[in-house]
Image (spheres, one colour):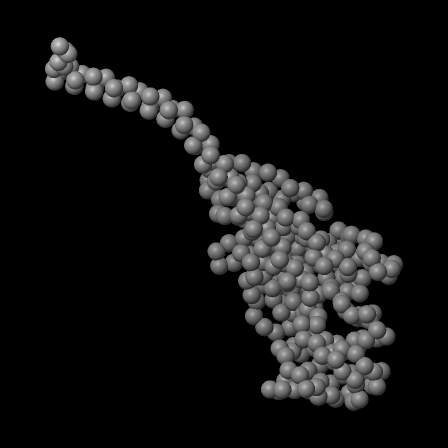
Length: 292
């Protein structure tokens, strides 16, 4: 005859099994929680790294699109065209002398060239071309033998009236290129320090990219005219555009707004001029790249 289990005995077995199960679960949780926390931290770190890489690429692309049109692309000598690099702590160009330009940053004054372009054979110093574009006031006639400046007199719905100054352009074939001077610099923006440009003559200043803390420019120059750069200079000054082969850029970029806790760790970065930049590595980073 099989022994009969009482209800109280059966209940005792269930309580014992439940206690053992709870104990095993607690042990597993003690083992798994650190692993899960580590996996979560690694995922956050990887996600932040990918976000920083994407931001870095976006910033470099933006500076490339802004500054690349200053390079002379024609085969002529770009006579008379120059660009200037200066420091915020020095005398500022008149167009930005009322701006709160950020300390430990450079400014750059140069012309956008060839945003509008059209092939032409010049038969008169006053020419009308069957082409319209967002022309600026100044233009350049360029071919492999010479370059000469002119002005836009009128832009119509389907044509543009031009006037050239130099009679040497008569009878020559080449390109008419637009020319508009800008000044790029750092100043306070709507939310934080930002990258700006201001037209050299007329027009409103425009905030281009928010979160740039420091900025330095160094021209890569072809001084011996052999087609490749031979000098990177750290000196401020005015240089011929025809010698410019590249522009080395150093930036301190904000990834996000720093909390007080994140500001407890600070690092130093020494740029090519020997200036020391202070930044918070948990929410800011340094980029160095070439615009060409």
